[in-house]
Amino acid sequence: MKFAHFLEENRRAEWAEHYVDYRLLKKRLKAVGASLDGGGAHMEHWPTSASLSVARGGSEASLAGLASASTQEEAFLVALQQQIARVAAFTERTSEALRASLRELRAGAPALARAAPAALRGEARRLGDEVLELERFIQLNQGSQV
Image (tube, rainbow, N blue to C red):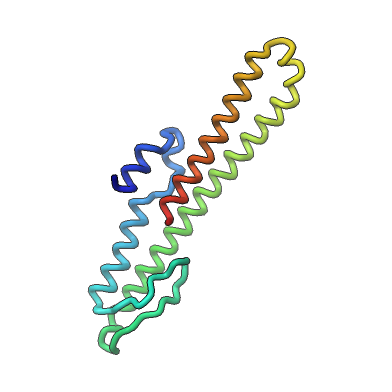
């Protein structure tokens, strides 16, 4: 199964707009490759981290295509940084909301345990499930960047 399909099938529908846009990043990365191939440039090393300094080999003539490759690399890295920032912001907002819900539950737990223990267990389970969903969200987004 292609990762894009895996991501679509396993993401939480109500959080869909907050996931990494894997197809966009893949498109930008293919543009980098095409600009390198089209310009006759050869990459000796594919960066494993976000870096604009990439060791390239080739003759002077083959270096002519590197300007467009550099532009494509920059576009990819900017898009990647934007996607990471979007995911991080959503993760932080969601984490804070879950912490606030947990604080409220903790404050009301003694009274709720006496009045409606099943409701307390249900709310605790719901919060636990939300934490697991957030963890799954993080793992899916990390997988899109590997």
